Image (cartoon, rainbow, N blue to C red; front, side, top):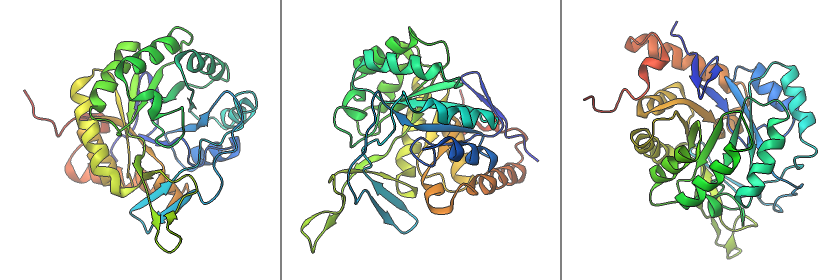
Length: 305
């Protein structure tokens, strides 16, 4: 069987499939459950300085199996309460990446320092949520601001920093390059695409917040394009995100330049048991096309020379 073990920003992963932030990571038990189900690593919910209840329902609209539209509003218990959940996942032996969100560089740095103290292996900066006012895309769309945020965090923590890049911009590669200049050890791309659904009978948006973020198979071509561009613009590792529903989807991301991938919507549809299926499909596919180690496939679709 093909070897699926990889290293991303110095972090050893038993396989490239990471539990994406915001899916199944609300508690230590769920993080541990994803790890036990076969995830190569788990990423926590995005945690902020203070508790947030999130937006009122409805917050999710599904489109059969090709997409999911959500506007949750970054609900979380706050950084003071969440370390106990990480401790549960660490006890299970999970490789954990802590996700944080904030409104400015100083707040990101404070949060990252506290998150590092929980014993996580790395920190992912949520610079890309498309629907939370004052956070995410609103602070992550300007390369100068991205560089300043990453640099401020780099000055406060020693663990690797992963910057999660928005697709809701004209040049995601420029954002990734800015993150690299600021000291990021890796970038993840993409977060959800800003999107909207309308209820024609009620004459209003379906989601209570109005605008939401689209994930799932529908956005895979966008995610692939962003990973492709970012791979050619930076020297740090790229983590692919967006519409990974099969082993073949994952290998497309790897050949576009990703060293690992995050899985979210597939879990919403099929549960954490999807990790076992994904690893099996990817291993079988690599065997069939004659690749012994996943790392040999990273960036393989790019022109050589």
